[in-house]
Length: 231
Image 1: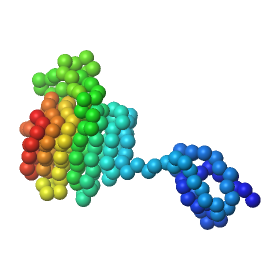
Image 2 (image 1 turned 120 degrees about the horizontal axis):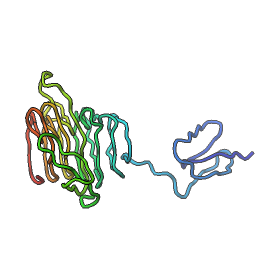
Image 3 (image 1 turned 90 degrees about the vertical axis):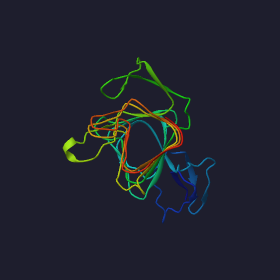
Image 4 (image 1 turned 30 degrees about the horizontal axis):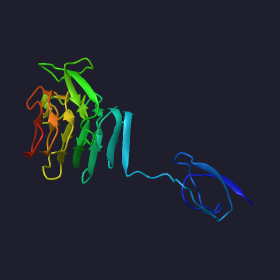
C-alpha cells in the first residue's frame, strides 16, 4: 500500500506511530511506502532567532530578533529574568505603540544595528517634547532606530520611566548594552525619556530627541553608565 501525504520534515514516516503536523510551509507532495526513509533536498531550516516586520503583538521575548522591515509593536516586549537576548535593528525602525515602554527588560538586552548605513527616516524637532516622526522633517536618521515609546507612569507612583527601554532595579542582572542604533522620539511622564533603570554600557549608537517631564530626557539609571563610544 502506498501512502500519500504532505511532507515538511526529514525523517522516518510510519503511519502507525508517527504524527506529522503541518506546522511549516508545505514543500512538496510525496508518495512513500510505510517505514521508508523520507529525504528532502531543501528541508526547512529552523531559525534560532525571530524575524520581525510590520505589526507585531507584544510578547515575552526569549529569542534574538532581527528586523527585516520597519516594525510596529502593539504592546510591550518583555524580557524575563535570567534571559539574554539581542535585537538587531538591521537598518530598520522599531516603533512603540505610544502607550507604555517599548521594552521591559528584566534580563540582559543587547541592541545592535548590522546595517547602520541603510534606511532613512526623518523627524521634526520639538522644543518641549519628543521629536516627532515626520518624513518631511528636518532631521534625518540613517540606519536602525527605536522610537515611539511613551512611559505613562504617574509622577505620584514613585521612581520609574523609560519610553524605549525600562529596566528593573537589579543593577547586576538588568543590563542594556548598546552596540548601535538611534534612540529618538521616546518620552516619559517621569524619568528617562529613552532609557530608565538598571545598568547601561554604550559602545556605539546615538541617543537624541527624547523627552522626560521629570528628569533625564535621554537616560535615568539606578546603576552604572559606561560610555565607550556613541553619542
